[in-house]
Image (cartoon, rainbow, N blue to C red; front, top):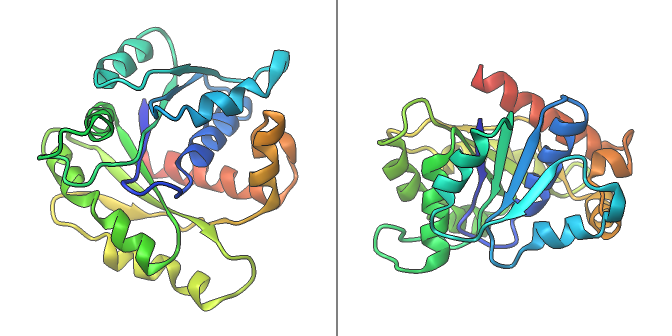
Length: 229
């Protein structure tokens, strides 16, 4: 299984979601997981380097190159149960752009069985992320059974109008013919654990196993697993 975590917009939490899913699925689901950092900024790699000798509990490699689809399939064939690709931003106008970030993202999506799109719950973020949809439609025409999941990430804590309406608005904004797009019911809230865990080379499920952030990531992982069965 290959999961690509992608969004045209930077700062939406792609690396946080990628690393968090890799952490919970390796340590608690018992899967052999490889995370491929395909973003030239190498944020996931820098995060993992802070773990020291303890490691992250899953393997990580950097590969910010346009043959990411070949590399992901090659690594999946080496015995990994799951390969997660942390994509770079910049997938807007993918059919025309020559930008390397765009090409890397497109190739990662072509390799993926599941695409996870983290989106922050604001209309400006929804509009920016919406630019990914034409690329998703292009890719879906080549990939049968591929599913796309929108994850509301960075929801304000407490009950706010923004938080309450986030899922319903996202369901309207990200509807597109020919693409199986689902908005997960689990929302990821802005919490300190997501900020502090990377500083010590941990994911939230190992940094604060009984915390609310860990519970949300577990729920996201379960929804993805249940939806793909």
